[in-house]
Length: 275
Image (cartoon, rainbow, N blue to C red; front, side, top):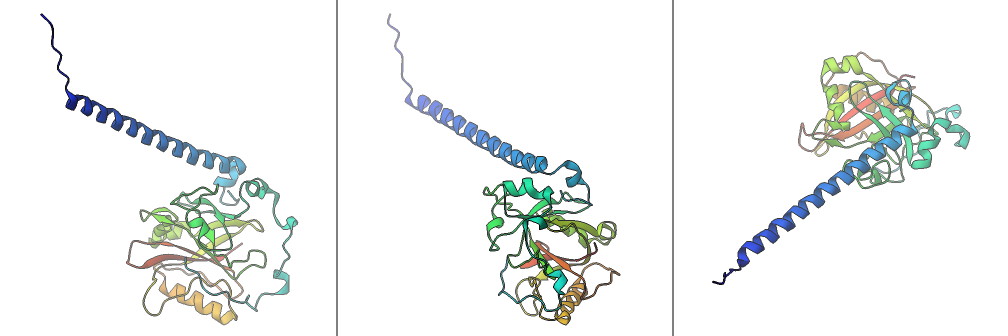
């Protein structure tokens, strides 16, 4: 007796779909692994370029645009240094070979913030670029394009993304807690031209729409009184208490990142240079 075999078209089609879905999932996993390896490799490149003591030691190194303003008039001639190759410390050479946009490195105690800081001719490039120049939704911290580290802007403005409220530069939200601030108020921001420590003097959640907005993006001021007006306003708006003194002779660093604590708001940190 002949055996009769029945062809089940639906069953074969089902097997084909399962096979294709399996391949698709494998490709996604493989792509994810490749991306992870690339991200890890980028970190390795940075860590190899900067010795570990430089990354871990706080004494070592590792967007809104507004109209351009004239440099402040209260800066002395001795502060108007000329830019030259000699001004750039040799410890930065390896990183500059990798990416000429690097301008500094920020390290904050009590957090995992230990990031290169970039600068270009705009305030958009490093919103979506990593240190290696690859696309990244996390971006890389960067200076306002108007900041002059050579002539030394009175207010260095630095931007960075906040992820999930308390990741990347969002870790600065921890300074809204007085106890954390009291234990970690000094951090380092070292640049191509000098190594510096900064003491935080104000931590604020500021609105970005509405009336009576604070322009924290100014990098220069026409008069020392205008600088003091800005600093006094930021200190008055601060969520933490500080007894730190300051004057128009000081240099300041303003850090801005996103905040989910209020609608249409930014977390803004103001610090003064202490070394």
